[in-house]
Length: 155
Image (cartoon, rainbow, N blue to C red; front, side):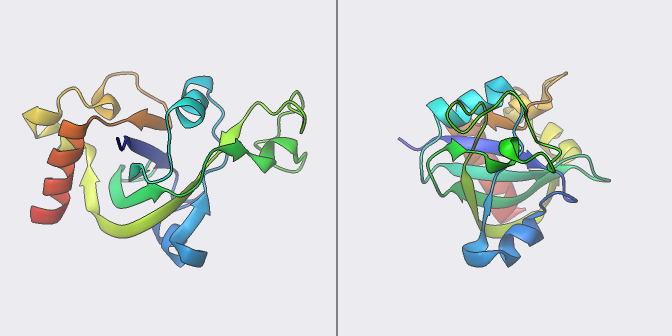
C-alpha cells in the first residue's frame, strides 16, 4: 500500500524549482526538527510513497509539485554540523535524533493555494487546513490525494 504525504519546504530553503534542477530531480529532505514529523518518516514513509510538495512561509503558500519518497530514512547529516542552523549538539552519529529522506519531484504544478484547497468541501479535514497545524510533514489520505490530483490535472 502506498502512503501519501504533504511535505512543506520554504522556497528560500529548497523550492520545487531547486529540486527539479538537482541531479535526478532529487533532494535530501533535511532539517526536520519535530518529533512527530520525524516519526512519520521513521515509522510510516516508504520508498515510492506519493508526496505533495508544498511551499510554506512565502507570499502564496500552496502545493506546487508532485513528488515521491526516493529513499529510506537515514540520519540527517545537518544535525552533526556545528555550522548548520539545524545542528543539534545532543545528537551523535551513534545516537542520531533526526532523520531525512530523499524526495524526487515528478513534476511542477500550478500553485494550489490554501484558499483553493479550502474551496473544496471534500478537503475540509485535510490536515494542512486544520487550525494550528504547523507540522512540516503530514499524512494525506487516499481520498484527499485523489481530489488534489484531479484539481492539479484538470482545473
